[in-house]
Amino acid sequence: MFILVDFYSFSFTIELVIRYIIYETSVTMKKTIIPLLLCLLLLGACDKSTESFSTSTFAMDTYMKFTAYGRHGQSAVDEAIETVHELDARLSVTDSASEIYAYNSGDSDALGEETQALVDEALAIGARTDWAVDIRIYPLVRAWGFTTEEYRVPSQEEIDELLAEESTMLDLGAVAKGYAGDLIAAQMREAGVSSALLELSGNIHCVGTKPDGSLWTVAIQDPLDPSSYVGTVKIADMAVVTSGGYERHFEQDGVRYHHIIDPKTGYPAESGLVSVTVVCESGTLADALSTALFVMGLDDAMAHYDAYGDFEAIFVTQDDEVYITAGLTDSFTLLSERYVMGAQS
Ligand code: AMP
Ligand code: MG
Image (cartoon, rainbow, N blue to C red; front, top):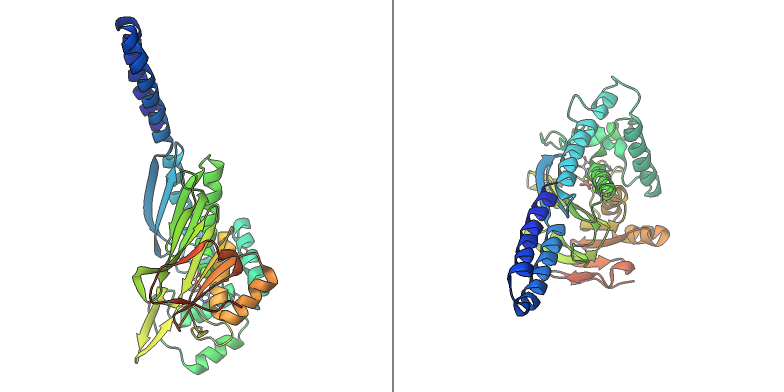
C-alpha cells in the first residue's frame, strides 16, 4: 500500500507539471520537456518495483535475515518472521511448550499433520542415506550437550547404551531451517513476490532471480576462516545449504568435538570433510542431505549423487581440496587461495 500511495503522489505531481507545460508553454518547450518527464515517470515506476524490504530476527538458535523485492515485499518479510517463530515454537526440542517436546517427553503420542509430514519426509531421506542423517538421534545429541550448550563428552559405555536403544525421540535440527526456507519461499511466491533472498544462518534460499533478472551469487563460507569464502555459486529459485563441523563445537582436553554426529558410532562424524554444501530446489532435502553427506564422506557422497542425481553439492575436505558435482561446473567459482580443486572423477 505504501508503495502505491507513494507512487501515485509522485505521478500526480508529474501530471500537474505536464498539464502546466501543455497549456502554458511554447511548442519547442513542449517537445523537449514532455518526453523527458515521461521518462522520469517511467523510471519512478521501475525504481519502486525493485525496492527492497528486509527484516531480521533470532529464531531456531540462529540469526536470520529475509529480503524481498517489489510492492509485496514488506508484507512478505513480515509474514516470514511470523512463520519462522511459529515453526520454532512448534519444532524446538528444548521449548517445553513445543509439539516435539511434548512428543519426546511422552506427553503426547501424535504429532500435528504438518509436523508429521516433515518427520515422514526427514525419515524417508534418512532411509535413502542409509541413516547417515537420522532425526531419531535426539538422545545422542542431548548426551553431548549440543541442544542445551552444556557440552560434555559421554563415556563409551553411555554411548553404547544409547546406540543399542531404539530411539523414538526426535531432533529436527538437521532439517528445520531448510523446511522453514521452503515454507517461507512458497508463501512469498503465493503473495506475488518474484525476487527474494532468505538467509537462515548457513542456509540460503532464493525466490526467483535478482530483481534485474540476473542470477543470485551465493558465497560458500571458508570453514577455517568465517570472514572469508571458499567460492561462489550462481543460482535462481534454489536452496543452498551448508553443514560444517565449524558451525557448532566445543573443546575438551585439547580435542575438538563438533555437532554433526555419526548415528553409527555416536561420535562427531570424522569423514575427512570440513563442510558440505547442497544445492537443490527443496530446502528440506538440501538440509537433510548436507548433514548426511557430511557424515558419509566424499566417496559415499559422490556415489549417492550418482545414484540419485536430484541435487548438486560442493565438498571441502580437511586437506584443503574442493570437489563439486558435475552440474555445478559452470556455476561454481573458486575464490580462495587456500583451497585447490580436487581431481574430478
Ligand atoms: P545441520 O547443521 O543441518 O548439519 O544439522 C546439525 C544438527 O542436527 C545438530 O545440531 C543436531 O541437532 C542434529 N544432528 C546431528 N547429527 C545428526 C544426524 N546424523 N542426523 C540427524 N540429525 C543430526
Ligand atoms: Mg542439515
